[in-house]
Image (cartoon, rainbow, N blue to C red; front, side, top):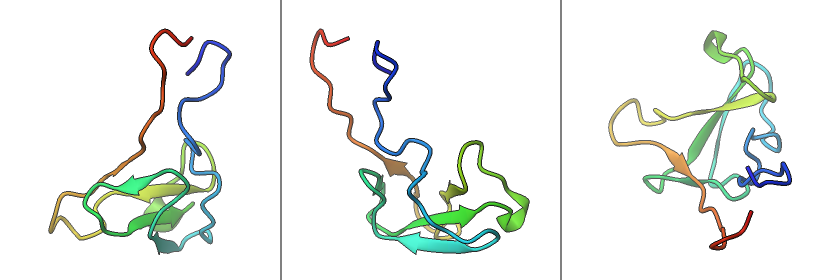
Length: 84
């Protein structure tokens, strides 16, 4: 988080991800988020498999391939030296 209180991440709580409650949906990308292994990002709506998002209505599911390959997501963060 920057000194002014703004977040370093774009869409850090996945608030722009639209998934129906109890459902799941694969996405190629979500805003600045990318898949670690180049596959689709799977997001669950609140209540899917009994899970709840800590903030918002969707959460990423990082075992999209059932453990067949390393899953994950990342976002490049652009910062400047000395910036506060």
